[in-house]
Image 1 (cartoon, rainbow, N blue to C red):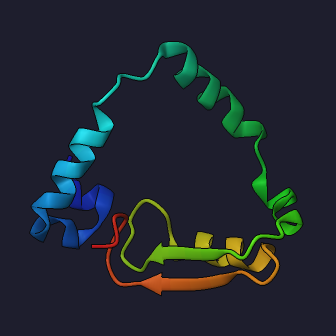
Image 2 (cartoon, rainbow, N blue to C red; image 1 turned 90 degrees about the vertical axis):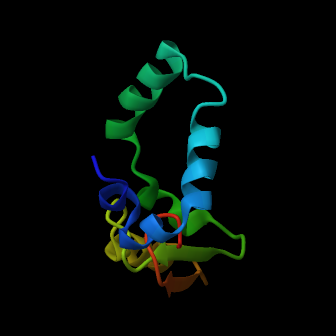
Length: 96
């Protein structure tokens, strides 16, 4: 799979970001038990139900060309968190 499909079209010109992703990803292999727990938790996790309870100053950053997380998701987060600030930045998933 082309990395630009995952991280956005601008990743091709930033080999240092790709190197960082590879190092971070493979420093420790995930356990099967931990992975299974994440997969089982996803269907029941509805963060939009509790986001209104956050009281921290919050900055929501989203990449305009992010193929993995659409800008609409950032808008939803910012709308649900009190006094959150949304910034849509150029670039893809890694903001490059």
